[in-house]
Image (tube, rainbow, N blue to C red):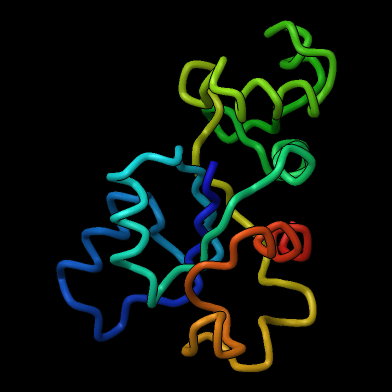
Length: 153
């Protein structure tokens, strides 16, 4: 799965990119959306690469994200009672089922957008206007996205 985090706002942004961010459900900065590794989702993320950062999320980080920031319909916290009701032992088993594709967030009733804090100790030295390859915060991070998510949870 691909984790996409919106980093920048939409002041002076073209209508096309603003619409792409809306389709990705990234309405505000510091919102995270999980996407399957499909061609259409990746094309949308690559199109908005100057406003988001993205990479492959692992099971451990997904379990932490679901435990701390997961929300049900009605903005209720995701708790252990919910996991037992759905037949999962803990959050790591829940995360593995989602990563393997056995279950989806939509069919379990979990909101697909996660609201995060700004990262502790800030983004990288280059700021939020430069790509990750040049020391900034934007674009593809691959496996390093897990460290960013942990600092934002």
